[in-house]
Picture 1 (cartoon, rainbow, N blue to C red):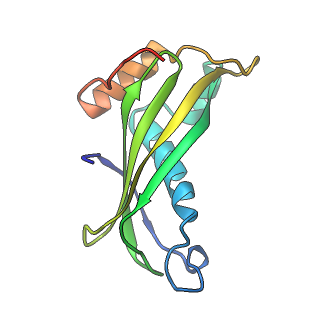
Picture 2 (tube, helix red, strand yellow):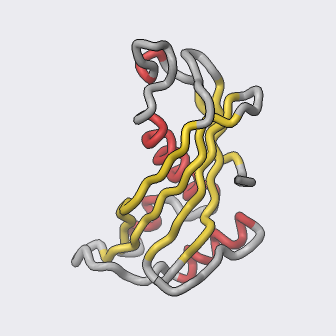
Length: 144
């Protein structure tokens, strides 16, 4: 996956398991942190989403593990939105060690919901435009 780096981190001891490597479930947390960083990068923070009266719920996470990271390793995390439908979007996530070794790659799907009703809602054009501008291309836009 060719995705822009939007967040960097260093593995903390508490993120490792008894085997001395990053515990696999922590990559879901890393993916979530990376998505938050992506929102800031596109100039559409989570606070902006809330102020606009909508929210995003994760409905699917898929991660393939390709390598291992250990305590104090420096990691880079990349993210881009590959597809935006009417109310859902799927992003691609990649984590690499600073030496460029691929650690994980995967996708996460969010559904936009109205903040008051919790019902699916259309992803606003302003958000779509911000994504396209940052990524220098519009994501695929098939129907939901």
